[in-house]
Image (cartoon, rainbow, N blue to C red; front, side, top):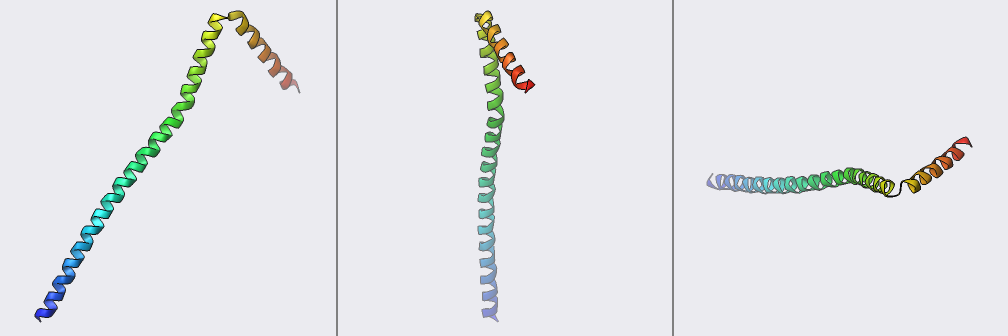
Length: 90
């Protein structure tokens, strides 16, 4: 009977080690997944912010140009309006 108890204890010890390894692996996967989620979230925020930043910068640039050269800005606006009107009529 002592041999059976010994094998049973060895099995329990191995099961404990396997459980420990599984827990370590789970913790590592959670950490890696958390980092990946953080990176994807940051990339998504950048993708949203970039067009907004571009539009704001473009607006500011156009507004500054219109303040510096109002007649040229008016002429460009009229030409763009004429072109859009010509295309729209087709």
